[in-house]
Image (cartoon, rainbow, N blue to C red; front, side, top):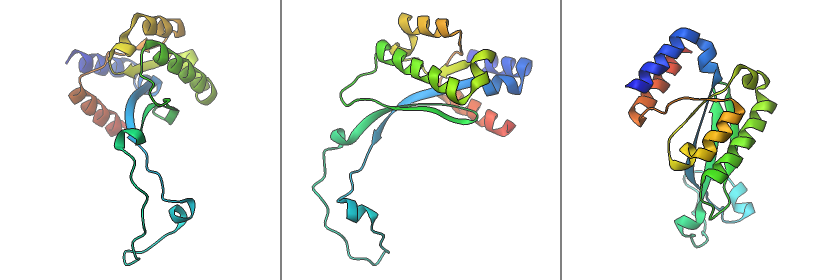
Length: 162
């Protein structure tokens, strides 16, 4: 409740400027599919087409990658695919935040000078002391992450404003 009220208060005070300064991000496991062959992957067929022979399937865990995505009101800022076997700790997350800063410099020049508001969830790498130091050095405002139920309510609210 506190996060939602704080969000509404800041929106009431700063309006669209506050919404346009929000940068949010999350990590997700993404499964990728290997096409049978390059030629087969390029071929189109209709529903009555004969089925093609398929390669043996890889195990699901071998086909998943961790992806970190950051975006703002204008679109995607950064997509980073993690190396297989890499776990996200504060060191890895800080490197990602530095890449995010470069992406913002290249794509949203005025955002850094007006002060980015970062909205990310709160696992240990995001709340670690080292991560906090990086965010403080960037002079980014870290917005308290609401519980997931409130995240959806806030997203619906933001979409209704546009």
